[in-house]
Amino acid sequence: MPLNPILIVLLVVGVGALAGGVGYGVAVRRARKRTQEAKGEADQIVTRARRDAESLLKEARVEAKEAAIRARETFEKETAKTRDELRERERLAIKREDGIDSKMETLNRKEKTITAMEKRVSDQEKGLQTRQAELERLIADEKQQLYRISGLSQGEARALLLGKLETEVQHEAAVLIQRASDQAQETAADKAREILTTTIQRLASDFTAEVTVSTVDIPSDDMKGRIIGREGRNIRAFERATGVDVIVDDTPGVIVLSSFDPVRREVARRAMAKLITDGRIQPPRIEQVVSETTKEVEKDILETGNQVALDTGVRGLHPKEIQLLGQLKYRTSYGQSVLVHSIEVAHLSAMLAEELGLDGELAKRAGLLHDIGKAVDHEVEGGHPEIGADIARRCNEPPEIVHAIAGHHEPNIKDALYTTIVSAADAVSASRPGARRETLQKYIQRLEKLEELARRFEGVQSAYAIQAGREIRVIVDAQKVDDALAAKTCRDIAMAVEAELQYPGEVRVVLIREHRVIEYAR
Image 1 (cartoon, helix red, strand yellow):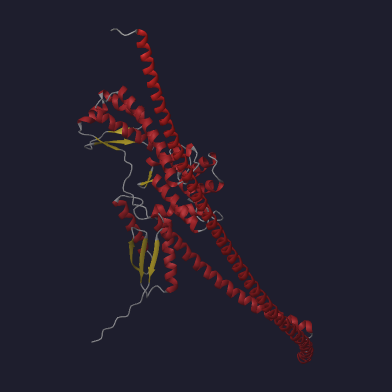
Image 2 (cartoon, rainbow, N blue to C red):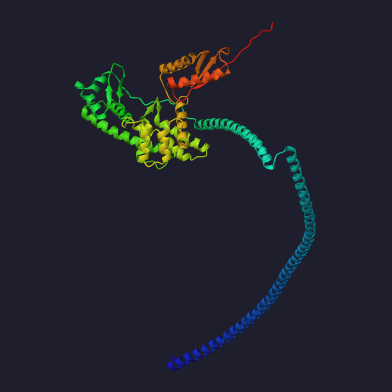
């Protein structure tokens, strides 16, 4: 039988209500259980928090006690240290006080000693005054007795005594003056030799090995015709462009360039070498090569002058002086390069001045510029010292340098120390072995003339020129020439050499006189 819908609804509502009540009860029981669990957890948390708090409190109390203990220990240590320092200071103060007391006692004893000594000195002074008065009285009595015995008055006795003393003093003064003069001469000679020897050894320059030449090598004699050119037009163009004479003779393999100007001769030598290497020898090409070579030589001159100033350490040179120094590279004297000679003289002058306690830099500058006039002496009238001095004067050089340049060849210069130094350095550089070259024939002739001149004098047995003609040893007959005549003969030979011969530097004349006695024991 079909169910009534209302019953079905009621049944469903009742079942739902029953199910809701059951669910509500279950939910209530679960909520109570959760509440109890939460309360238990809260109690546990509170319990743990209390335990943690008590533990932290105990630790804090322990740390506080430990900190207090540490602070007390630190305070006690500092207090003990301070107490020890105070005790040490007290001990030092007591010790210092004892030392002061000891010094005071010592000073008191010294004061008493000084007082006693002053008293003794005072007594001695009184005794000395008494004795001095007694001595003066005795001396006066002795003088009176001497006056009575001699019959002379006091003024006459004084005049007689002073006269004798004056004579004796004059004699002793003359002896002392002579002795001092002899010692001064010996010392001056030894010192001069020592200074010159030390300076020369310090320089230690090389010997002269190269000399500027004025010849040009050619590959073959056929080149001579190309240099001369058709009807001589090439050689004329070359001579006109360079101002140098070209000598083409029968000498194989070379042509000679002749000119009084060393710079122009160097330009011609370089230009000729370039033309020979190039092979194109014609007037336009010659003018072009000569122009290029002239600029090249001018540049080389300036570079050389600047390099010399840098090497020698001479600063502030005038541009004209630098140019003239560079030109000295192509100037020679007796085969010696004037530039190398000037550098040697600069160093020698500086060392001589330093040995004598003078300004070495000023002497070096004067030595470097002393032959600067030789760079233009072929263009300007006059000797190279005067020309160089005029150039230095126009370049605002100091008066000492101008005087040294002008007077470095003047003998017996006085009151001009730097001039004397430069003159000595110039002689040393020019006369040292190997500095200047001369032909073998001229060298032999000079030595022969030197020996022949010495043999002309009476009593001379033989003469030998040694040390490249810088010394001649003369042996005389001891029977004909005594000691006094030997000195005169040596002097006469030296004067004759100086008057009649030409030589670089100086010649030392050594005369030997000896008497030999020979016996044989059989």
